[in-house]
Amino acid sequence: MLSILLLVPLLGAAFISFLPFSMTPKLSRKVALVVASIAFLWTVVLSSQFNPGEVNQQFPEFLPWIDALGLNYQLGIDGLSLPLLLLNGLLTCIAIYSSDENIARPRFYYTLLLLLNAGVTGAFMAQDLLLFFLFYEIELIPLYFLIAIWGGERRGYAATKFLIYTAVSGVMILASFLGIVWLSGASSFGLDALNTKSLSLETQVLLLLGILIGFGIKIPLVPLHTWLPDAHVEASTPISILLAGVLLKLGTYGLLRFGMNLLPNGWSYVAPALAVWAVISVLYGASCAIAQKDMKKMVAYSSIGHMGYVLLAAAAATPLSVLGSIMQMISHGLISALLFLLVGIVYQKAGSRDLDVLQGLLNPERGMPVIGSLMILGVMASAGIPGMVGFIAEFIVFRGSFAVYPLQTLLSMIGTGLTAVYFLILMNRAFFGRLSAQVMNLPRVSWGDRFPAVVLAVLIVIFGVQPNWLVHWTEPTMTAMVHMPNPVVTVSFVKGKDKT
Image (cartoon, rainbow, N blue to C red; front, side):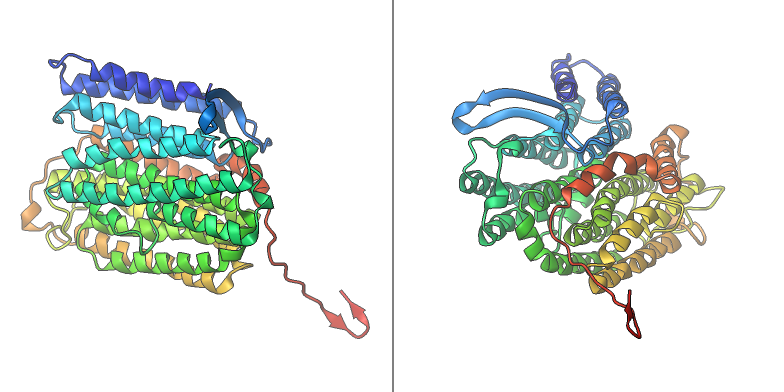
């Protein structure tokens, strides 16, 4: 059942790549959208058959592959991977739908998008360390070309920088994976064959360093973040949607699956430093966002800050905080996709993302009133306004982390206030006031262009009002993953000779 999620986009990519050269870009786009929709609907079918109370891997698949390397084709999903698979399927459909109907080299473009979907899907389902690494590296290839060919003026620089950073990330992760298998004496790379709990504390910490740096680049965390703003600014809108909405989650997924879960003693030892690292990322990302004049770069820096909340929750490693980490991943995926989509529409219609140029876009007669209204909803969700999924995710993260790291949690909460500051700057400059002369008489935005943004906005509100529809898949799995000792605070109330 899980292999279908890989075969559908792979076969679709092969089919599109062999279409005649005379095939129109619109037809290529329709074929790619049908293929991505089938894969997404199959993920929905799997979610309907998923047992939330089962903490072990479900729908397991196993096929011996390369015995000499200990590599097996081993797949499975649980409460951590299922929501991310749904997010990947949804945003891939939105990215294809939002692509330019007349894009150059359409066969190559849509083939790469489907290969990217397959690579990310395989990484979320892989239950073998080496198999995960293969999928993790596979998604690098299509993303590099998608930025280098269809990006902005500095696309070559941004794509090369992304390639170098991600290559270093892969080397660090592979070194740690090889060390885990070799030092634990396992006969294969399968997660069920590893016995990492027997490793000494020093060994776990050493192996964990490679995982932290490798996945820290992917998230990204400060100071490993410098590739992200360039990649976002130069990438087209559909690629920015996938980059922020899905691909960054490979980093946080890897920290939880292979860091906290496989090396619990080492994780507990470095957790205080991780909490401080999270605070630095949150505050630095928010501070840089305030200084930006490019709307897209502002949203890119906001991603750095918001992904720091995931690290804080993972460092605290309480059942509630770890649940908040997956909620924050899904929340950020939906909200960042909405914001990048809306910024892309503004850039397409107005020809600029500069806050010194744009003004009055909320004008009901000549501006973009619907886009402006959706942008207000998106920035409110990102700032953690109640009634939206951003508030639920951040509240669970802070509530679960405060008992373990109260100071770091309070400092991270400042990031929520700073989020409101830089997004208020964005809204005030670009959407309020009189419509500036530079963007007078804007082309009308069709409902076809608005449709994916409306879908994302509805999901943001639905999961904000009824978060249990998302939490019930995840809570048992995330609670079971928290198997490291956490500090316990004992309080005694003394009155006379009686103690409670």
